[in-house]
Amino acid sequence: MNVLIIGGGNMGRSFAESFLNAKVITHAQLTVIEKGEAQIEELNRLKIGKIHNDFGDFIAENHLIILAVKPQDAHSVYPKLKPYITEQHIILTIMAGVKIKEVEEALGINKVIRTMPNLACQIGMGVTGFMVSETIPQKDIDFIRKLLETTGASIQLYDEDQLNAITALSGSGPAYIFYFMNAMIQRGIEYGFSLTEASKIVEQTFLGAVELYKVNNFTCDEWISKVSSKGGTTEAAIKHFNENTVSLHIQEGLDKALNRSRELSQK
Image (cartoon, helix red, strand yellow):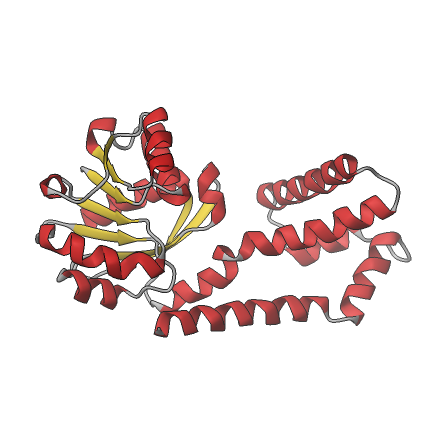
C-alpha cells in the first residue's frame, strides 16, 4: 500500500520513520508533502521517501493519506486535497478534536480513520486510539493497525467519544507523568542531590516501577501494599496522599481534560 503523509513535522516524520524502520512499507511506497524548508531539509537528510512541497497528480498513486497537520490548518488543506481524492483513498487523521464526519464532508469521502496518538509515538513507545468508518474493508484496517503499531500500541475504538477519553488518559498522559516526576526531582534537589542526580533517581524509579507492573499480574494497589510496611516511610507518604485526596484530584484533572477535548470536538 502506498502511503502519503501530509505534514512533515514531528508527528508526521515520526510516523514515516517508524513505518520505514519496521519495513512495513518501503521508501518507494512513501510520499510526504511538506512546505517548510527546514522540515524538507530534515526529511531529505533522513532519506524519507519522496518529498513534495505542494499538492499534485501524484496523490492518486497513494491509497492511504495521513493528515498530520495541526487542526487549525485543516480548512486550508481540505480544498487543496479534495480535487485529487477518489473512491480508492482512505484518509487517516491525527488531528486532535476533528471528527470523522467533518473530514468525510470536507473531502467528499466515506473512508476515514480518526486517531489519537501520544507523544511517545516518536520513540515507538506510544499509544494510539483509532476509530474507522464502517465502509473500510477489514484487510485495510488490519494493515493500518500494523502501521500504527510500529509507533507503539494501538487500540481500536467503536464510539467516537472514546477518542476524547483516550485523549484525556493517554494523549495528555505524558504531561501528568512529567508533572509528578518534576515534583519529585525538585524535592530531591532540596534534599541535597544535584539536578543530574535527582533526575537520574526519579527517572529510574519510574522506569523500574513500570517494568515491575508489566512483568507481574499485581494491581497498583497490590504493589503499593508490597512497597509499604506498617509504620514505615512509604505508608507515611501514601497516608498523606490519601488524607489530601490526591488520587481524586488526579481523576478530576482527567475529567477536565476529557471535557476540554469534547469542547474542542464541537468547534
